[in-house]
Figure 1: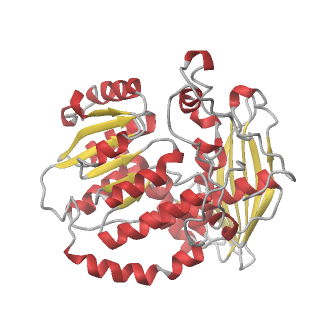
Figure 2 (figure 1 turned 120 degrees about the vertical axis):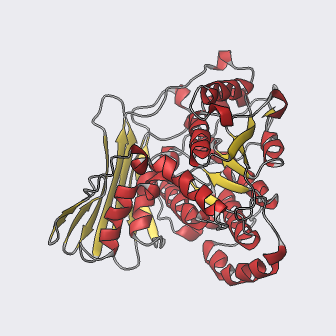
Length: 437
C-alpha cells in the first residue's frame, strides 16, 4: 500500500451515520432546489457517458433502452480511440437513433468528465474505479443524476468523499443508482426475500466464492505507450491505485451479497490472507492474485470469502447463506433444509432477467415519476467490505471498518498527466511489513 499520506478529509463511518439527521434537515431546506430532471416534466432526458470502455458502452445501451426519451448527447474518456469504438458500437445497435453525439461533444483528457456532466441530465460513470469519488462528487455538485458503476472507491479517503457526495445528493434530491447488478436480478431478489422471511431460520454463516482464471491480459506493452501514465491506464486492472485490486473490482459482487444478507450492517472485523502465486510477472502490476478472508459480525455470524485469478484452474463463482434451519444457494435460486424452494417464475421475457437492464429501467422509471433513487450508502458499505479484505491480506492485521474510513492512505498519483515524468509502481504489499496509514 502506498506510503504517501494525505490529510484526513472526514470522520469515520460512525460519524457519517450521526450526520444523517443533519442531512435530512438540509433536504428540507433544499425543497426549492430543482434537479435537472424533475418529475415527468421533460420529454427528452440528456444522457452523458464518462468512461467509454466495455462496461460504459453497455451502460449507455441499457440507459437508451430503458427510456425511449433518452438521448446520448456527450461522451468523455481519457483516450479518444475508446470514444470512437464506443460510438461505433452504439450506433450499430437498435438504440443507434438515440445516439446524437457529434464531434464537438466528445471530450478527451482527465477533465473530460466535467465537460460531459456540465451539459446533461443524467451521467453514466464507468471509468476505472479510482476516479469514481471525484466524478460522483462533481455530478452531485452540478445537480446531475448519476448511474455509478461499482466499486465506489479504491481507498479510505476516496470512500469518505463518495459518502459525502451521497449525503449531498440526498439533500439536493439528486439520484445515485449504483452498479451492484446482482441486487437488480429478479430471481435473486426473490431468493433473498425467502431468506429475509426466515425460511432458512437465523443466519449462521455466509460463504462467497469468486474463483476464476482472471480477466483480460494486459492490453498494451510499455513500448506501445507514450508514457507510464498511459501504460498504467491502458492496463488499469493490474494497478491497485486504479482498480483497487480484484477483490475490490470483481470479487466484490460476493461481498455485496454478504452485505445484503446481513442487512448492510458492517462486520466488526476482518482477517485473512492473500498474495501473488500465479501472476508473478511484472506485467501484472502490483495486485494480488488470491485472497481468503473471514468477516466477523457482532451477532456471531461469520462471512467466509475466497477469490483468486489462477489460469488452468477450476472456476467457481457461488454464494451460500447457511441458516439454523436450512441453506440458501444464492446463484441456484434455491433453498434446502426445513423449507425446500426454488425460483420457478418464467415470464418468457429475457429482459426480465437482465439485471444490467433492470437497474436502468428502474432508475429512469423513477425519474419519470418524480422519484429520486439513492442507494449510494449500500454501495459504499459493499465497497468498504472489499477495502477491509484487501487491507487484511496486504498487512496481515485484523481490520475494522474504522481503520479504513479513518485512514489517510491515498493511492492517487502525484498528478494526472501524460507527460514524460515516470510514474513508479507501488511495491507489491508484503504482510507484516506493509502498514495502513
